[in-house]
Amino acid sequence: MSEPSDEHSGPNAPSDTPGVTRRRAIAGIGAAAALAAGRVLAPAPLFASTPAWRADLVPPAAPGQARMLGVPFEKHAAVRLAVIGTGLRGRSVLREFLAVEGVQVTALADIVPDKAARAVKLVTDAGQPAPAVFTNGERDFERLLARTDIDFVYIATPWEWHTPMAVAAMRAGKHVGVEVPAAFTLEDCWQLVDTSEATRRHCLMMENVCYGYNELLVLNMVRAGAFGELKHAEAAYIHDLRAILFEDRDEGLWRRTPHLSRDGNLYPTHGLGPVAQYLGIHRGDRFDYMVSMSSPELSLTAYRNTHYPAGSPKHAEQYRCGDMNTSLIKTVQGRTIMLQHDVVSPRPYDRLNMISGTKGAFRDYPARLYLEGMPGGEKWNPIDSVKAQYEHPLWTNVGELARTLGGHGGMDFIMCYRTIQCLREGLAPDFDVYDAAAWSAPGPLSEASVASGSQPARFPDFTRGSWAGTTSTG
Image (cartoon, rainbow, N blue to C red; front, top):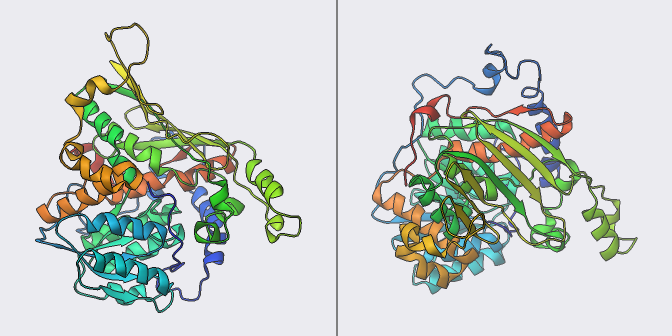
């Protein structure tokens, strides 16, 4: 998964908005979410048949603008890769890509020359020529994007940089993969969608958890009908990050800041991405609306008070985000999803990863399975008995190498391997810009719902109706 991310800094606004600082950009996130909330939270028309609210939620496409659902990549004999952000996460993913056959690393960008130099050494140690390096300030990545020897750009920067960098990459004619979440606001979600459609370039949010062993095994079971008709799922990102959030380096320089201005689900996609794949979101169903509520904020304040002396500048911070955010999502087909976020409580790591249907259920952490008719009565069973039948071919084919490399248990390599496979063979990606937008949207929608006393907030239809006629692949 993409935590911890890296500490590279990047642009805080599109390239035509120079001079915006990272701190000012993050401070504006809450205002942007509130602006978005104003157009999705009016309770009266929520279930109305009139199209009044849909005019805002589904802006018209440009004339002749085609959708990107199921659009294959053009074939590449070798994939020329650039990485923007070569800190902790950027170097980790770069190492995985270098282990995939057919990858040529041509360019790297970071505002910290030492970090870029360490990434260059990874490339040359792998036997490739030294890539071009761009370290001349916050906008030097734009010179990287102007190059003609890049097919795919991977963005591994702090969150608020993701949308402007991804948009710039697509406008420069590159396919792009971006760390999670892809966007902070609904407007940014639409900007990604509109740009991908207009440029015919894919924008993939690289949700590596979708490539976890259990997640792909369960996906195979879902598609084989093992759970019957699906009706409910649960997803979460529960991870005690307090020590990381308060570091005076790396992610501690920026990742605590959203807790000062936002109250909602700050990081929804690690749990939601796999569940969306199980439910066939945008492949026969889509998210319709959500309600959200947050617990009190207690843990960051307590951790700060315990670990930092009274004179520390951190004591001037007032944290807004509730420790636990819980949301309920309803899909157009009537299925339900419980989604949670908590990165500040002392408790074990958990993504829930639960799916329930008319024939049984799966729940993770620890992984366990119940299918109707299994021996032992109403008891969970280990998943070992179904691995031989349902193990995903990606893990069967390259799982040994993935586990050896070790990135988040191997899922990082599987993600990188599959991305390059799709690019080299001219396949459609496993998920696309519509998924990037919809899986990111619970961030601003949860904030809007919490701020309104848990009123429902509608999901935009980022596919503009195309979801109903598409089926799952991959």
